[in-house]
Length: 112
Image (cartoon, rainbow, N blue to C red):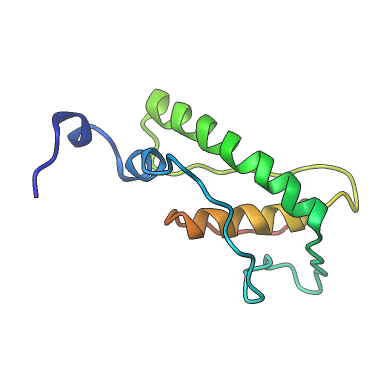
């Protein structure tokens, strides 16, 4: 296997993000990860899916820029907002979308 000169300077994350040129919304499965907070009640509804479908492609664009500028191999994404607005649901969906795109991800829940 040969690599172009451009690929030799890219890290694995950058190559994975570059490969997401046409993103198709994956089918949501029942065994989708739902975070790690004990007792967390995740109820994914259509509104959460709609929001995640808007956020995900934008995240990819920002991640590509960040990786090119910093050379980092890992990125931490935080989801914040008021109580009951769907943070856990959207974070779970984004994590699932990354996994479906071949990018390792994990949802770490927290109270603070």
